[in-house]
Length: 270
Length: 359
Image (cartoon, each protein chain N blue to C red):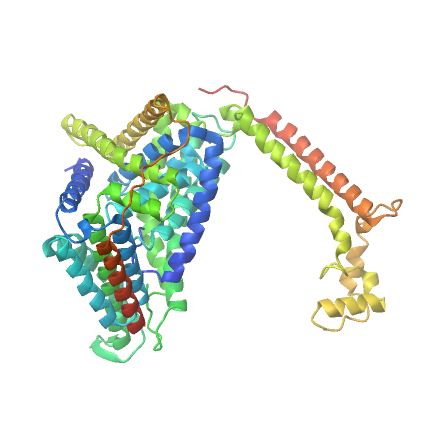
């Protein structure tokens, strides 16, 4: 029990690795989003997220949520995955944040709760709008994240004029996250296996800080090795990335549908 | 503190993307100048490290646990530019690969945590640890305070972003369209958690890591320890930045005669005699939206005006006839005086620094 912080950190690592594996599995399925050019995929979803933030009417946001769920189902993302990864998490987090707004937002009282407070129509509207907006936007981005392998995200970013160096750093950072998660996992497991008895609070903090310190020293050493490896292969600070894109008619069609849906939802929902 | 999509209006997101983009641009340019070809591997691996450290469950005083951003330790080891880039990359991967934190709010999250957090942490650490040896306890304390302040500054900026939403974005009935609480609710609600838990988690990880590095890997603390402690900067960088500084000073010196083109006087820079002359009174009135100037100079101004007489009144020594030459001479004298004061101060401060060696 005293080493709960080690167990919960290990559980966190497992969760991250599990989520990455799920995303990889879904990204390999034959679905709608998976079959599209990454640029069309990213641009289309971003336009829809923009429409969600622009739309003010609940009906328009609900229509976009239905569209997001349809996209998810067509891309082989199950409702159970969405419920577990998005809807329940957002409801728990945003729901708590939105709860006081039911009472604090001015409006006509709908339900009297106690002597001085009441749920107002304005409050209900505000809370519902916030929860639905966040649910819809996070559903869209989660579907994008689940259906897009990391190299595709990077290629799409290049199309949006993100500098080559930044794209390369994102690619390398992503690669080394898994190595460092694995390293930290082993260090915590080793620590857990040789810790008996009760650690004081200060000793537990020392364990966490020293593990982070060792991980940092290893990371800096690793960056030096990576640099030497890059240099030995001819790296002189110039970043070259293979950009091979091919927009097909179905990509253009998806982009048009996304832009049209977003425009209609934003226009009618204003 | 990761703001998800849907909490901020599109215009707020756009403004914060702009702010973050400016920070990324400046950071990338600055760090490339110092690290040259090492930037890509160093920042990439450090971003991966920051990502993993954010997942550590830290035991806090009182028996609870919390997560830290690792912003202060990034600023201490890499400096502000490296920290901005490494944390922004970690946040981008969280948003784009793991779906944590929004895509439309990625600019806001990077601005709050990577930019504001790194700058506050770096400034605090440099200020508090100035002149301290690499193995000094003061550095540990400085890191703790830097972490605590950085986490709270990031939270405060995020709270202000939340709090301004209902002011600017509401429907016809006045109901908020995005984050629903005004500043008087958003700021305390956000800060209570950060002043108590998140700030302490950041302080614990920053202080613990600096204490560990002091023993195990002090070289990593050298980059931000200041030239006196860490040894001089690479000569190339120093020469380049000094050359650029001197060129800028020379250009500014040459541009000083531009002052003769200005008509009239700057608002508020009047002498008591200007109130007595009709032309002067007319200028004062014209510069003050036609509000008539008082008939006599205010008594306070008259009394204080005689306290100090400038050696070069109106930027021209009495023996110089040409105003342009006067401006140039004044500028040269001013720059020389500032340099003299700076060099004297530098000599004085160097003499007071501890003479111990580090390593």
